[in-house]
Each structure stands twice: as C-alpha cells, then as structure tokens.
Length: 111
Image 1 (spheres, rainbow, N blue to C red):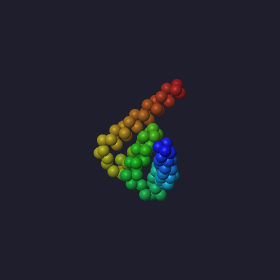
Image 2 (image 1 turned 90 degrees about the vertical axis):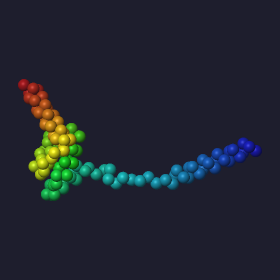
Image 3 (image 1 turned 180 degrees about the vertical axis):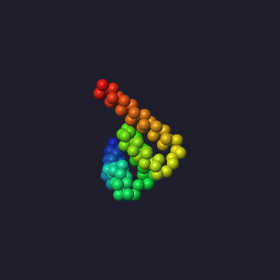
Image 4 (image 1 turned 120 degrees about the horizontal axis):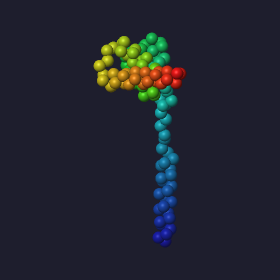
C-alpha cells in the first residue's frame, strides 16, 4: 500500500512539473540580430551624425581591433567636440600605436 501511494505521489509530481515546464514561454530578443554599427554608419551617411554616434562607432571598432576605422571615428568625434574623457583619449592613443606598429611591421616585411 505504501509503495502504491509513493508511486502515485511521484507520478503526480512528475506530471505537474512536466506541465508547468512545458507552458513556460521563451522570450525572443528581436534586437540581437541587429548590427548597431551598421545602423549608426547608415545614420551618419544620411547626414545625422552626432558626437554620441561617433563615440559609439569609435569604441565599437576599437574593441573589434579594427584600429584604422576606429581612428576615423575618433577623429570625427574630436572635430565635432572637444573630448576630455580620459578613456576616449587613451583608446585613441592605443589605436594610433596599433596602426603605427602595424604599418612599421608591414614595411619590415616588404624589405
């Protein structure tokens, strides 16, 4: 008798948990497939560039290790406004160093 009640309790618990897990809905993030860099570049091409957008593009390319593109956006940012943010200045300096070392290593390979 005790075995039957334990089996019944287990089956009841398993059934309830299966039903409750099967009814949970997964939320889909519709923005995860959007490339923000492409959207910002398109906004700039349309003539709506702002210092905020330049900063976001510069940071995005900096962290992707695409330093030539990062330098382009850093320079546009500095033309649009004087930035005194030490992080931005440090990233700009690091991007300059990376581009210079890349160019000098290419020159060594050519010789």
